Length: 286
Length: 287
Image (cartoon, rainbow over all chains, first blue to last red; front, top):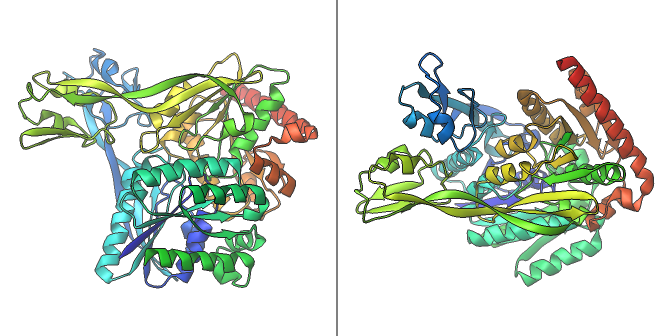
């Protein structure tokens, strides 16, 4: 079983539109949406949820005002400034338990923190594991790990050949959780100074975790000279450019209709280019 | 006044709004830009500040003196992040998992644990013309963005108009970026992805109790669902920017709209007027 992760560093480069189309093109796969913070893949794949599971983040501290003597020890020890007026701000609390252990009055309890849900769903293109992190929650990395683990287990149990993962933007905790141990990362970038800057940092991360990487330039014709620079940069870093996809209204139209573009408009330029990117990905995964 | 620019969905134009608003206001007002997207900071590519100082952002991680350690395992028990473990006759630490809470240090009965700083990123400070600029850069390979975001936020100078460029999403780093702002601009695009993530972002700012309004970028590339949602939810739409290939190409090169096309300053001045009215109105109803 091989695991492909689609990421971008910079947000809004087209990750989800690509994964949606790959979902339609690929045979024999489980899909996973690891952008647990702002998941979008379900908008293209229209899943029917079969199983729903609760996801608990780390327990959060709660101060019982009845028992609290306002000695101030917790205030002094909390390094996350999560306690003020002897109340814990659940958004600021990271669940470290330092206050809980330090309180001599036993006035602090650690309370379970339901911080999201994850789902096993069925789509027209195969099973999908996805999740929804509660608003303003921590621990997106842990939920990402859960989604990936569930997708891999399903693939192994039922003998699927691939796991296709839609990744989160950025390069922090949820991206690291998505990236470690995948067989291949496909970076979708855009031809802009911002895209190039973010690509460089993300390639650094892929390199750090020794993950083989391909790059695809989306909307390349919006700035052909910068697209050229991106290609040049990849050549220097010895990273293969799996393809270039032009700016194409058919992608926007497909997302409005809630369908992968290769299904909605298979003859469009975007569809043909995305199909050829997918062929390159398959070749790289083999 | 602190204005945060956030979005839910990435790539909708947060940085474009933040930088062009900053450049327009800087003609008459003291302005500060704080780029809190520490994972992928981009505002400097447009404002091109000259950086004068760099400050390290550190957390404190445990260092174990093996000679004094009894291998009792108290540290392992109290660590919520599984960042320290007694394995047979050794104590292993996992700095990439450590949040720097200091729990192990407090728990150790023999004082075998000391703390050492670990660099997790930097804050770079400088000026772009009269605009005071700071951004955070998370060290590549480090998962912990929130302390770097907080370090950037601490640079806010209330006597200036502070414009915060937030990371995408709705989780902890976004919350740390936008908390304490007087107003939050949510930049979106009129697609199902844009709406889905706008609804999440609205949930977040409401949970934080921040006044907010919406900007629709590439407003002609999609349908009317964002406008319908905003009308139903009584959320003000402060600005709509249609797609324009010239602006897209300018953005790609790292150019700023108000510098290349000064007629756009009027649009951002209007946005500022509107923002002041919205903030004034919010203050009036909360008093």
